[in-house]
Amino acid sequence: MKYLITIVILIFFTSCCNRASDEKAAKAEIHVTQNTKVSLMGGEKWKVNFATTKGINNMKSLMESINSKSSLSDYRKLGADMQTEFQHIFQRCDMTGEAHNQLHNYLKPMPVLFKNLAEGDLKSCQSAEKKLDAHLAEFNTYFK
Image (cartoon, rainbow, N blue to C red; front, side, top):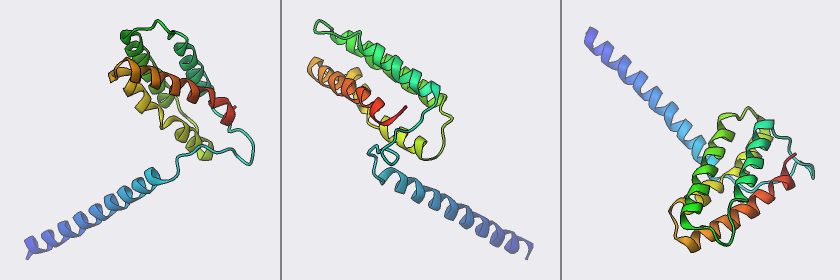
């Protein structure tokens, strides 16, 4: 009888834990599928922390290393350096609320471009660099 009660209790707790993890997974899926377009706060820019501004400015500076004579290895280095700066932004992120959500919406397209810089041929690297440069230029449109 003791074993039966123990088994029933274990089954109960296991089903509760599974239900909680299923709910977390559903919430995460909703978050991922929501609109990832950056928007202003009633026409006003979102305030970001110093680390984010510094990281974006560092990324803009890194972009200056690329020119018409850049080689594939230059693009590879740019991709690695950009990924490092990107990770620093996330590590130092202490923002909350909707400004935080909007910042993540802004940052989401970047990893694909970093990957193109790291793995693409010269033409795709050049394309990714142009897209990344344009994307970085938009930062000041949405954030202060």
